Each structure stands twice: as C-alpha cells, then as structure tokens.
Image (cartoon, rainbow, N blue to C red; front, top):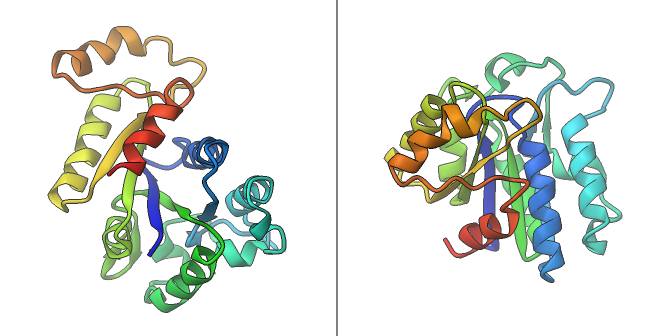
Length: 215
C-alpha cells in the first residue's frame, strides 16, 4: 500500500478541492509521484463531476502516468443529486470493491495517493457507513480542512475529537478566505492560548505536507 492522505473538512464548501490541489503541487515539486482520487462525488450532471474534473486536470500536469485517465478513473462512484451519498444513492450499500479496484489501479501510477472525501466526517454514505468510517477503512493519514470564520473553534475541535476518538492520525489546516480577516481577533487568541498550532493552507502548505508525510 502506498502512502495515503485523506482530505476531509468540517463541512461542505470549506475548500477540500482547493487544498487537495495545493498538496498535489507541493508534493510534486519535491519530486514525489502524486496521484489523486475522489471515491464518491454527488452533484454529477450529464457526466460532469466538477471536483473530479478539477483534480484530474491538476494531476495530469504533475504526473504523466495520469494523462490517459478519464474522470471515471478517479471518481469511481458518481451520483446526480447534490446531497449526502446516503440520499443521493437512495441508501445503496457502499461498493467498497469498486473503490478498492480504483485505488489499486491508481497506486500503480504514483507513490502518494491523495483521497478527497465528500462533505464532512459524519456525512452518511449508506445506512451503516459514515465518511469517517471510510477513512478508517482506507488506513489513511487525514488532513482536516477547517474555516476561519466565526464558529471555527467549535467546528474544528468537534471534528478533531471525532478523529481522535477513532484513533485516526491527522493534521489540521485552516483555509482562510477573503473576508476572514477577523480570524486573528475572534478565534486565533483561543487557539494560541491552548497551544494549538494554526497552519494555514496558503501560508504553510510546506509544513502541512511535512506533517502529513511523516505521520
């Protein structure tokens, strides 16, 4: 099994795809043969998987082994409805064999595989499986992407606790966006007080990669 890094977040639209692409570029700049997969994507209309297309376009520029692949190769499970996989699939049991086969194929082409999840940790995939269960099953080091707006303390600590409770090795990255300037006044003081290292996607991607690779 190659090195696996799973990208999850405190919620949807936090910046998983943006962060995944940043990690791919940083690792590739170090000479690592990178690969990527998004096992499940919802909101796929007329065969267009927006996140998958972005990821495939990015990785093709970084690893020639991916140049002949199609989006179906890196997004093996697709659903039309933009909802939790449980809802989008009509509670169809998760096809782990399909995911395993896709990962097996991709890991022949790379040395490090970045796996992008869908939504947050407790997004239901089927009646018995949450996204956090898939992370555990894949034995992947995890990067929790969180936001920098009001409420990030609660969201970050809750998701981190969930990963700790499952004994999943992880790091945390803050994806600060335009308009999040108040972070340093309303949230950063608490993190500083408890000795919580704040790593930002745009400022500390090199350190984030170091932490993930060495876990």
